[in-house]
Length: 175
Image 1 (cartoon, helix red, strand yellow):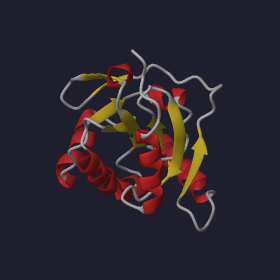
Image 2 (cartoon, rainbow, N blue to C red):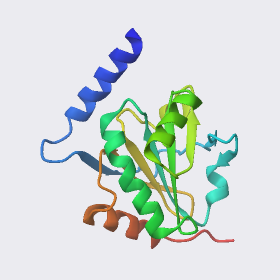
Image 3 (cartoon, helix red, strand yellow):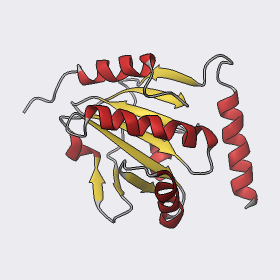
Image 4 (tube, helix red, strand yellow):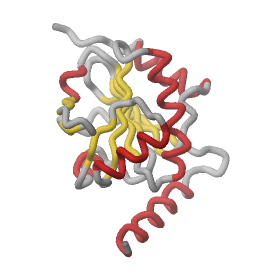
């Protein structure tokens, strides 16, 4: 429990270091920064591979049930997914280092319908450079990451709408 408490305090401190008027920070994903091949199980035991989603825009959201900004942001991610439909925009909620029962309790309590993937040991978050929760990586239909949002964002707001629209208009993969 001591390690979890220290980690929570560290992450809260990092989130608090964001500009006072913003609860988030949007940065471009550097073309020189490689993106890992992501593969994770969901709560039903289904394997999800990012490569299988090529042709659709993807929002890969890193969250944990102990993270208050994550809990606050999650309903707007669900609304965004409902608005666009999973054939255009895949919104994946990647749970950070919690057990499947813990993540499932959150899903049941909130009525979340997004695919919830498990990052049991934190390796995916580490490989994606995630140090602040929530964090979301925006991936274009060609499979390349374009931006990272660190911190809580209202995904139904104007700024998020512009981010998603630009993502949907990004080049599609060539076949």
